[in-house]
Structure formats: structure tokens, C-alpha cells
Image (cartoon, rainbow, N blue to C red):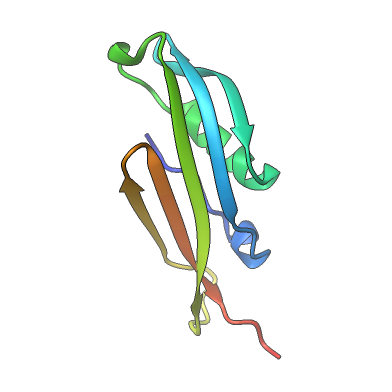
Length: 104
């Protein structure tokens, strides 16, 4: 599975939050999505999961996932911030991006 994109636009807008998603797997694809969280972040999660391929062992199962989007301060002047991804049990993904410090 490809993780959701924490786009430069979302990072620049300092949009953070948690997206909880419940889906059903059918024919190797995610279906019947239910999301809770910031709309722009939920859209990024949905796009990633639309492209995901699940094993046949998951067919007919309901899957719950949590995606946490956060920022960490950086003095770096870069148009492409570095990002870190971590996974914790059960089905929790954290995506943290560098964000430039606001200029006074």
C-alpha cells in the first residue's frame, strides 16, 4: 500500500490531524469507506486506499485504520519538505513533515 500524500499545499497550510477510516475489502479493493477527520486529509487517505491492492485473505473483512498527519518545525528553506512515516499496531500510520518556521 502506498501511504497517503502529505502534499506541499497541506503542509504549507499547516493542516494537521487524524483520519480514522473503516472500509470493507472486496475483490482486492477497498470499498464502503467511512471516514472521520479533516476533509482534505481524508481525501488524501481515500486516494491512497483507492489505489491499494489487498490480499485475497482480506476479502469480505472490515478494516479499520488511523492516519495521523503532523508537522515538525524546520529552519530549512526547501520547497520539498522531508517526511517521515511510522507504523504502530494496530493499523496506525503517522506521517510527519518538516514545516518551515513562520517568519515574523
